[in-house]
Length: 289
Image 1: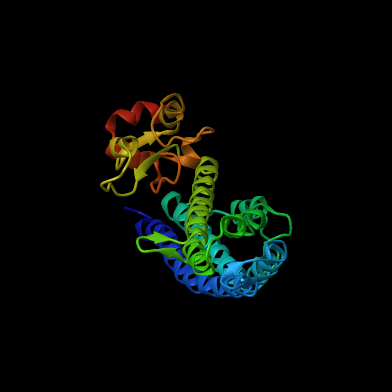
Image 2: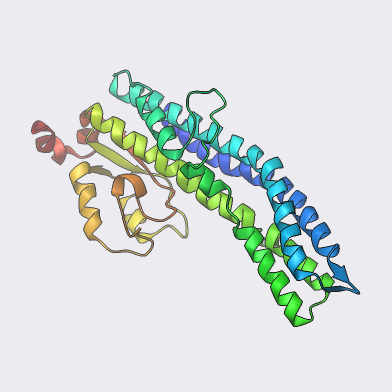
């Protein structure tokens, strides 16, 4: 089908982003674990945490050094893949519709997310949406809770270090908190931004039907299984707002959320001719468009 290569590229970029960020975070988490372990060990006496108040400040210093030195590497991967995905979507929509698509939607999305699109580096804008998500102290606060318990619970230093390492780097079969957080929010941001662009631009260029794309795996939601590979119109998708299923977002928008929270399916917008070829009964629908 026309545009296959371009559409598949956006999906591959999403998967690639997860892999690249995962590798970067594996390295970054080790750096953080060492920084915080040094801080904790320096506040111990006879194998116990004895300087809880001062340790909190030292932990914060170490964590914010980590943010300054390591997180920009993760941000670079995230933003570059976001830009590449938006460019791939633009190329797809141009190919499938035969109409030249501008960069307006890309720059609008970057602006909404708080990315400075006026520079080739695409840096985050201070106080913007992405910056507030990236610089998140959830991991640091989890470590602080471990420290608090140790101060009042007669916990051995070795146990504190083990718990801290588990929080940051994870354990067998479970990712560290930092990696888990970034994987979740990074994928959601890129997927939603991609769907938003495809929806807005397709509407502008006169595409009113889509294929509910993506694969079906063992834990695919029934909602998605029922729709995968099928063609729907905009009006039919809007009716999904009135349905209920596990995983549906509270502020659900079918064009932004597809099957709900962390859904990996996509809406592939197609021409009227392609929609009718796949669903002949839609011929009358398009006569009125």
